[in-house]
Length: 150
Length: 150
Length: 84
Length: 84
Image 1 (cartoon, rainbow over the protein chains, first blue to last red):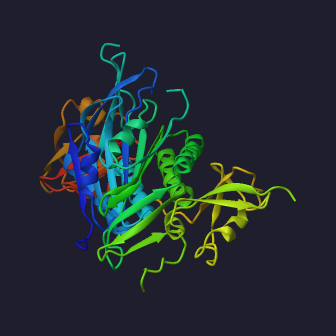
Image 2: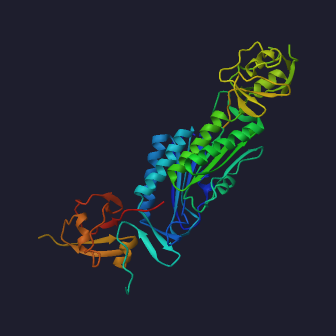
Image 3: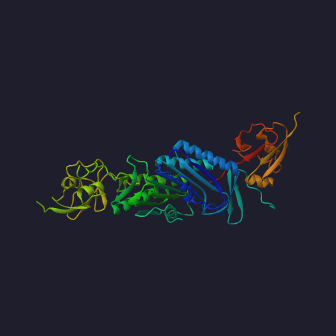
């Protein structure tokens, strides 16, 4: 209980399990747990997005997620667990999950919000939209790659 | 997807299942899901709280939870599911759970926060702390009941 | 001069324990306001001051203390809540 | 007059696809700043303007474009991210 903040950060190619994240932040002294799950919205487009493909600079993404978790943990007295999927993620499945627990709910909400906001802002992870018509588009600030042969 | 907000409110004497709440707010058009779980903190006291016992004015508690869910659903374009336990809840187990989904994360966080804040403020539900030494204390604004025979 | 009314009062938590039952039947003067019900509860409750923040429900909906009771009404005394 | 240095450049996402590999070996003048690496990438990348918000990591830690490279360094070009 008094051992200080716990932070877990994970990159995974499998489905995210919210229960695992919640279990990672359990603490008898923490009365509030907040989770965030980010899911690909199917109706983005047109053309419709059928899946995303995530790529990361893996060691730095993990380190950055841990650093972000530790910021929230220290600022809010929270435990934090965060996981991000890599590789293909079908539309409708979760690509990122965060759990944060704290003694009281304002701190748990703030910690969870900090972690997801900063992961999206800072972690070196990129997504590629894969459309129903087979086209793909990286979301990385560069103009679309010219399609070969056109 | 375009069928408008969904609101589920439930009182239950069994353990809360976060997955059920999350499933209740799933929507292909909603990219963000936020949950809140409230758990009895064991170290409250002294004397230590070993469990809570919840009592409600059940029809109004359910109606009030639904009204609160609908407020959040309308204000934030969210789906909401909320469940509150009644009867004995051992320390360390969840007594209340909320899930809210929305297209984007600020709305999902705001909806979840609104629902838990307002349930705590308005729903006619009361808790009794049960201590390790056998004493009990209702949290209902009245002075402690005199112990018979003292 | 109108006939008295019979109302049912629902009580919860420590109020229920003090009353010894979840429901109290009261015969009251016609049009008694909801906010006066407390003073008709059995002892030892009516000697206690009603807690700050006491709310009222009438037949399953929120109401204000000035609402006039009618025969057959069901009043709930909602002590300050502590769910969550 | 100092000897050139060999550095490794990590690229991701559409930059990786344009380069055709996740890693590029470059021989550069000693003390080349990190921010100049882009201009040494193979075509067609170096003709593109670097995207606004491009960040840099050096040997696994964030760095600034003015940092001077040394022999054996590993630089990562971090395009604007889109995780979550």
